[in-house]
Image (cartoon, rainbow, N blue to C red; front, side):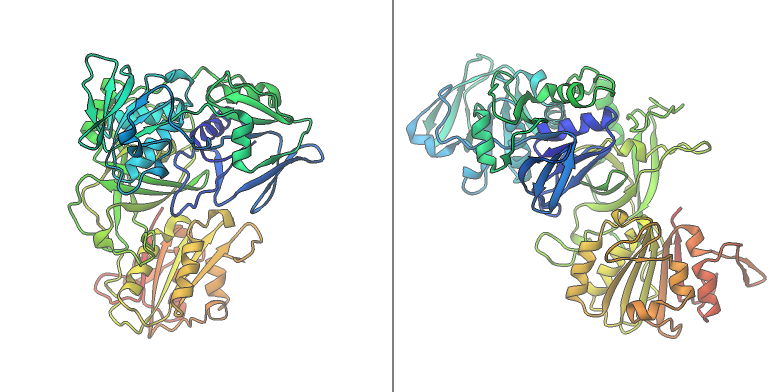
Length: 579
């Protein structure tokens, strides 16, 4: 299934489809993942960013979506599109002309800081507006009197509940605005409930998603070619049916069940979805144990994520290369449905993760850890096995931006750049998978302090889709001529990455030809993080290293005259055992 657009309705459909057993679900998002990521991605859903759909046509069997990044074939296509901004205010509420310049039909019409805003409307759109306004620092009152809450997408319902529970917004469930009048140049909103006093705001936002399907489709600019398999257009109003050639309108709250029965009848029917309501017990547990908020959650692929967490209070400074502890309650649900004897326990499961770096801040400068409000983590979903039941990542998989989490109060670890004292020395970072996380922070620290020697970061993964930081490192290469990023893959041939393991890169003396960096122990510091088999940490017997059966990089470096770390010895090889 392909879902066009990253609106809440479309993302809800994608999430329900993946949860319902559909193996391949792709969301085409026009957003930039660095500036405005898809906000509510779900496990099992792949999001292709910066991709604009232009045409849906009938192929030889499946539908074909022509996009700005190439064609995509699918058995079914759904469109969750933005409603065209209204040219005039809703007739449902009276607005005095003297304050009409502060009453808007879209957040983009607000000039300057939004301030205090009341959002009035129906369906998912007011919730999406609310989320965007909060990101701009607004204080929001959301009026849902008109909305049938159960007919909103489940992601919209969940977001309302969570924002209200976090006291980030005020929700008026029953009070209906009836009039907007002028008081000293600012809009006062009158409500039909005697229990709700008239309130003054800086701006009023009125959503009226009553546009016809043809109007919504015309506004999107997407051409739909008539075919045997219709495209599904997600709308809030189930009564807004309109017969368009090649298009079927579907209520957002019923989209997956309608599409499942039409295109995927072999999958089981979806269970009825209810509004996610956190009970008082769960609120108490979160308040007691959680002390941080997830501010960014990007899924590199369904099993690999970049997560940013902002602590409520920052008690200790970050030294690049260190780690911090993340935790979630055993009462949280698991994505894999595995039987967990600890499920429901009022305790935290915790695990330490090396702290990564977003590398560039919003202005394009190298990040400074002293001013980073959130910590970035690079996390892979660990599946259950016969002898191991992971407890944290299957719960983290169900989290989204805005969710609460535990973050250890202090950062720790000795795997830092403390040994790199010569700004003209060379530095080599070797990592497998998410082991590159601390190296990202360390590379930024070197260049932020003006390091002049050569810096090379090598990362080995199974597939190119497991490389989450390539674009950022390519930007670093363009900015710093003494930097090189070398991605390796082990299970495929991929453009822009060599197919080999790190042991082969070092053992066959290919490092110099690939990067220009020489394995010279007199001027090179080597840092390794990741799979212990790649590192090959030795055991020390009478001051001599004893290596295991699997050839690791530590043994290869020792053969070339490098000094491995042991107590009382100044080493030029350093490693963090990540597994």
